Image 1 (cartoon, rainbow, N blue to C red):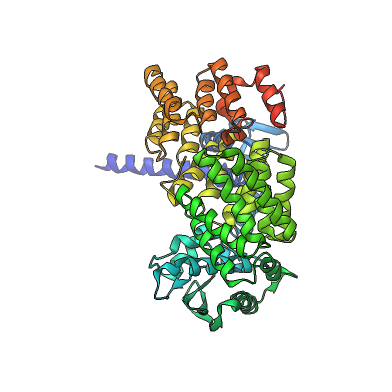
Image 2: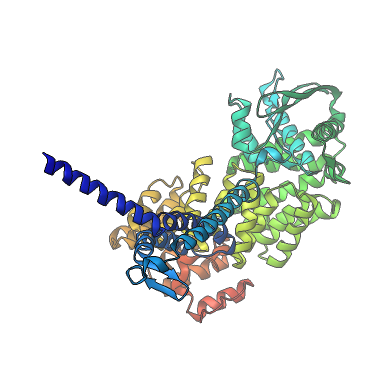
Length: 593
């Protein structure tokens, strides 16, 4: 027993000497310094590198290197010592000549400095890079509730809600959430705090509308999203002809309550694109209601109501602007009287700008037409930039401009614009879908898939909601993951396209051929570009260029992706590809050295 006790005592002594030696050789300090420095480096990489579009694999390698390097740093601290003569093996330094204590004090200072930088970075990340939405002045207009006895007046309450969004977007210093996001909460009984958190705003405008004969009663209430506290509430009993004055009064009241300033000609500019005719305004609201349904039947009804609004007031600029957009979607989604519809779209958009050069919606519509119909990209950029200047609080022209920049191959600019659009409309399928494509085209697959997933989440049944995710996985070479996404695609057209691409990657030629044959049989009139895309991905150049030429001849809007789409990379070295870019007026690809 005494021998055993002595052995334990010896082990304890050796353990104490070992830990004492770890401390003397500054191994503990080296571990803390390395961990703090590695964490700081990783944070800089993950937060700063994306701003400079540095590839994601660089960040992953930095993280991996930091983890692997930790044990080597400890071994280095144990075996080596820094001396006035330089680096030496610890065993070669006499104990009397060791300056380990001095080195330890220097390490302490470096640790403090590194931790200080870490705190600064955390604060910058919290309050500068990502910001605190509760500190900015922001608002969302929830759809006004229709309290009329006639449910058919839903278009009127929805229309007033959207016109309030447009009026408030003219207020300087105020972030106003777009229609797509605000209307997600229509008819849903969610508490205000949850809505405020989802939309990233600190105030909400809600209320009711009662329309009866030629009178309207609007109750508006501004509330604090965090606690539901009422900031103000007003009731307006007016004749229908005074509805624009009511909108202006509400905008002024919001500005006063939030201590922000109306822009010089803000709401007046919006209203000059409108009408003094109650009947024309009513027809416009119905047209807008059906336009926002975003289906072929809705577009047809919308056009008829816009026709009526313009008949009643031939100088109704806003009605012309929205009828122009309606024409483009009718041409694109029906294939009926395409040339006549496109010419009508051009006439209407140009008429809207001529009637009111200060109407942001008019310039936005004309920018869309110049891009989507005319393929006049410099003119599209100019018009959309003008729309953004006139309505800086509107996200839609930013997202459309992001699409134009994607077509031109200016992907960093496209990504920045799409992010701005998503910031103004955080539940917008349009914004996140545009962002997802630009990110995937730029080779930023993880971010592109995340944006694509967000897009699919906010509008699961939308066309091409899985496209960005499928392309990202295919470009990675991950066919199995691409197949899982393709099978979730709600659009039959895009599902066939995605399956044809994916089965080729998986090596199943028969399945790829079958999906491609279905596309040709069912979709050739409206999806020539997508057919060409499949042939290009399969390396069948002649067939790909045959379908690209057909796409060009029918002005297939899918062809607007031809320059930036990485699924066509097999065609880039072919002179026919360069010739197509020249015909379309697109910048040529820059050859990599």
